[in-house]
Structures are given as C-alpha cells and as structure tokens.
Length: 204
Image (tube, rainbow, N blue to C red; front, side, top):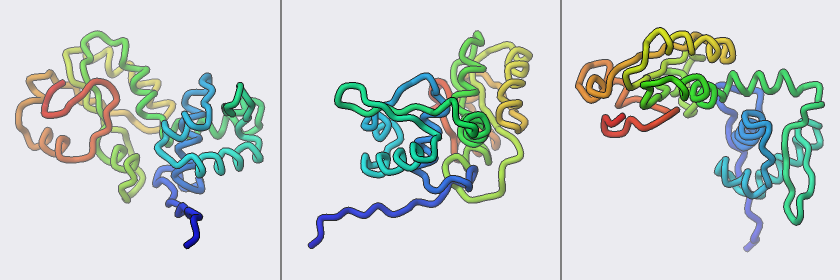
C-alpha cells in the first residue's frame, strides 16, 4: 500500500472565490492581516489549522508569485508579505474586505469603555463560516455591555470604510442579552463569530 498522503483541494471561500483553496486563503489572511509578524512554517500551519505539507506547498507557490518572502532564521523558515510587490496593496485590501471583520472590529471597539463582548452574526458571519448564500449586504454585530451608543456608532465608520459594507451594531446590556426575545433567540441559534469576550450561555 502506498504511504503517500493526498490532500483534497478544498473549495474556495464564498467571500473570496478568486483564491484557489481554503489553505491559501487562510495563509494570506494570517500573513496580510498581521503584516508585522514573521511566521515560521509550523507556527503558520498551527494557526490556520492546515497540514504542514499543504502550507509548505502553498507558501512555495506564493513565494514564486512574489507575494510573500521567505527567509531562514536558524533552522526555521519564516515568511511574511512582500510589501514591495505591486499587488501588495490591492491584495491586502481584498483580504481585509473578505476576512478582516474580526480584527478590524476588535481594533475599533477594544478601547471603548463599557464594551464587554462583541460578536458577528447574520449573513456576513454565515458567509465567513462557509455557508452558501448571496453576498452579504451589511455586517451585523452584537455589542453587549453599557457603552455610550454614539461612541460605538462613531467607531463603526472605519470598519465600514475598510470592509466596504455598512456595519450595524445592536447594543444591549448583559441583562437584555440574557432575556428571551425572537431576535435574541434567532441570533443565539444562528452562526455567531466572537470578536471580543464571550456570549456563551448568555454570559457577556
């Protein structure tokens, strides 16, 4: 019996059909959303949850294309985006639009007093999780705590510009989130992607 392991090519993410595979998408998202961090190959494979061999193969393709640069640090190979590549800016913009909602929202909300937990929900969250459907028309966000609403809404201007979609925060207190309502039940039983804190079992 052959010992060769063959990895099936996975389908492209619904939000970014231009990418060739889920592994490639995750590599690009990891590298281009944290451009100051140098990832070694095993660290990168662990971060994105893909086999080392698949990551090594995809990084080789991206290096050959000039989109990432790889260098030796001791015995390890480390990679980072090639900021001198002509496609660097447009590609990072595309990745921010397709995959950047969590880090962009976290950066916008983390310093706002009273914000205890934040999560994506609705169609944008569903597309990020790979659920088929039409492209989202907006980004739905649950914000739990007692922040100043005007501060939260003002903070959404930057994510709206970066993602190219309206960002709609729904703000509620911890007690309101723990109550039952058709809206809260729909959010709880749908797809949620944590941004900050936790909303599990109604806890903020």
